[in-house]
Image (cartoon, rainbow, N blue to C red; front, side, top):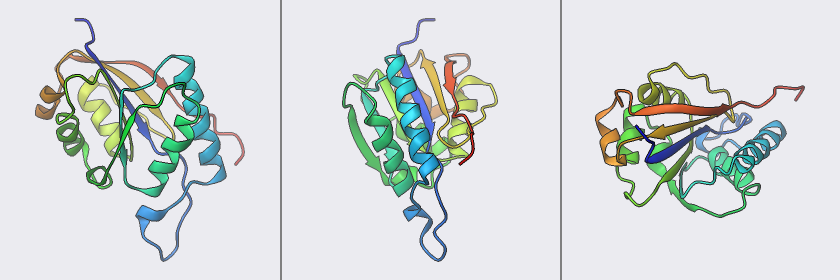
Length: 168
């Protein structure tokens, strides 16, 4: 089957600790900033600019998107979605199912284990998601049909990227 839609799943870049502070406010480390920009360049080199970005409300996810987007040629619509912060894979699929059918390319910027789990549910293959990791998935069904779970061969992993882990 021919892909009708494309889902780009990205785990936020490397964040620091925030002793005594709320987890949602953890900020990117310098390595995270560098890796997020490299991820953006990788997407740009492949012409992978989404129509819509659903970004977690966590500070580290929003910062990741800022560095990624600075490398892209176009500016997609971005929705900062609080439900994505603590979402599991099934929650993500339910949010993806709310996306308008006119959207052909959707990007999720969020957290693990949800990023790895949703990728595995859709593709049937285990997924490794270090910080800044990306999976590009071709989807042959409408977004609304993802809410039911497994894609039964209707989604295929077509590309992935992980940062090089040089010295911090």
